[in-house]
Length: 166
Length: 103
Image (cartoon, rainbow over all chains, first blue to last red):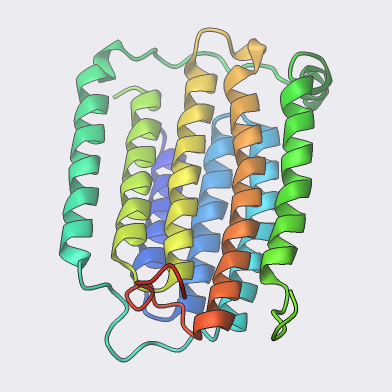
């Protein structure tokens, strides 16, 4: 457990907390970006360079921008008068706390059996590319079809709805 | 504490934060943000198990995380498109006011 890990973990958790707790929706989206960046650095800390840079490209570059666009298109930045939390927030908080208690208990129970620190695996981007077109070629094709369908579907769903015509 | 346990605890905390956000916020976009946090926590688990697992050179956990990132991007696009469509239809993104499926 290095100092860098604690720093990155604190950054990620603080970003996640701010994304969930802040009142202004645009601030939430920006805090979400901080959490995504912290996760990308955690991936780099885990010697998963490709996943770390993919995280930066996909989440910070695309998903966070998409969230900001959606907030601005739906006037979501205006804070509602009757609070930002739903009427059943206490039940939701209790469920989340219960889930964290169970997950944390499970991790701490099995902590002594978990593997110790191992030498960093030497994995190059070339190996990942070879695996993508060799062993994982079918999932790759399915993901390609899924992304095409999802993007066309998102455009059709968000298209302007004219009166009478569809 | 082993390094793997630390990463698993961070992932559990992040998952719970995302779950709390998805269950307690009013705004539909904030619920989607919570779901994104939960997906990212799962990805962190996959990468951590890949790193400290017995066969990292097989790349299984890494590939799972990369495909999961791609699917999460598709999910975000469709979810936000739905939110924009609902906002145009009902003129609100407040989930407490959306209590009818007919519209």
